[in-house]
Length: 235
Image 1 (cartoon, rainbow, N blue to C red):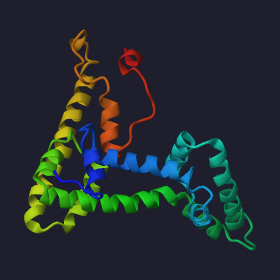
Image 2 (tube, rainbow, N blue to C red; image 1 turned 90 degrees about the vertical axis):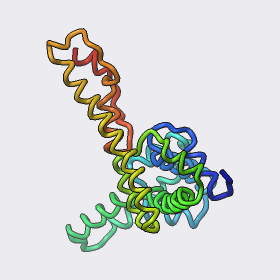
Image 3 (spheres, one colour; image 1 turned 60 degrees about the vertical axis):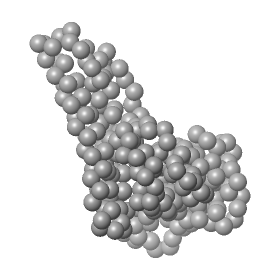
């Protein structure tokens, strides 16, 4: 498996074979962007203009707080709040419709989301090229544990650019990785529910105790934040 500056990040993402590789891709990009925006880019005027214009979503504000110093985050917020005030609260004769539209535009906008979307498109292109041309990577791709539902849709959309002769095989393997795990986690969810039947008292829970968490992660591409011992809580 030959590597270059474009393929190294993709090989690093797929190497661990732990969960959905495209979730790992997103996590890597989010970590880098959160560190960048609260670090080296914080005082770059051109970046600040864009962060003021686009803002950040709840998820990425959380990540910025997790990786950056509070001073960095507060400096970013200081100019962002000034921009929001000017856009929404300093408009003269503003209609309710315009206010609602301005607030909604803010809710739908995120500097990190936009940058991750651009980087993801590039990495998916590299991934598809490697799958076509590198037998070792194709084997590594096919050995992944699963692909979550949101990323299954995203990858299949990107795969439309593949030649027809390659698309069929890629679609078959990608669908297998998503559907196979769906069957597995659905079986565990069903088994968890069945353990509350009195006839199964004292039975083996198998892998079902975290079935809800794994099902939610497959459905949403995000781990649920609530943590509980399902068995202890419900028994």
